Image (tube, rainbow, N blue to C red):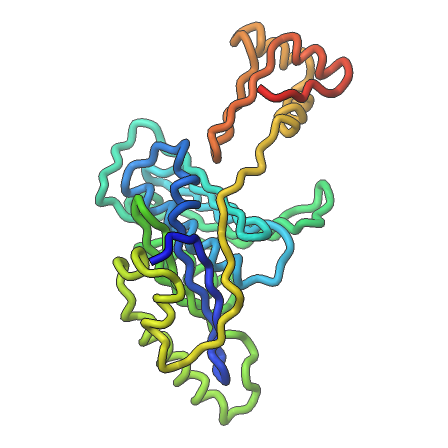
Length: 302
């Protein structure tokens, strides 16, 4: 069995059904290298990562898909961002002082009091400054991230979607099926379309968490759909990559203004900014700050 990170898209001929399967090992380890998540939060973020990659793979879109869940439990905010080329990163913010057990699921972590919200945002590559993101927001529903995403797709996008998601310390994996809109177009096709969808979803529902974690996407789809003989697209390789940079921190400091920036240096000894996604830290001394406002740039490798 290969450890190669893979997302595999497929389509079933003469049916209204398309799908994708994903399994991350190397990228999943890289994403968590600077994170210290409890086991239950690791599972949660792995399921969000797999689900976001699967949804992103189904879009004809140049830009970033961002899944953001605001919680009212121990997890305050969970974010996964997928950019062109299936470049992915993720972060989570916890409520301080709240106990997290290894057995907690999504509802206990994010929706303990029923006030959780799930948002999917699309950030076009060519979005102009000041132009708002496309954003769909729905109440957080169900017992799992798969339930929440399926509810989002039904409520916000009106796309029938089935998801099977799982994660542990070693892998983050998932399987997605979607009914393509406006397929067929004739009344006599409706029954056969529904029969095809039900048959394929029944086959998919036999997958287990262990199989998703241990098998490659190629092996998963063969195990489930060998009789259906789907057509496959070229496999893609999701990768962990962060977009943080010293230049972005410089822009943030400029927005603060020179007086406030120098006051922070006076109080703290320096300006130190650590990326929530990758753990990279940028430091600015008083000299750096003065130079930044003098000539507009102090970029250097630390």
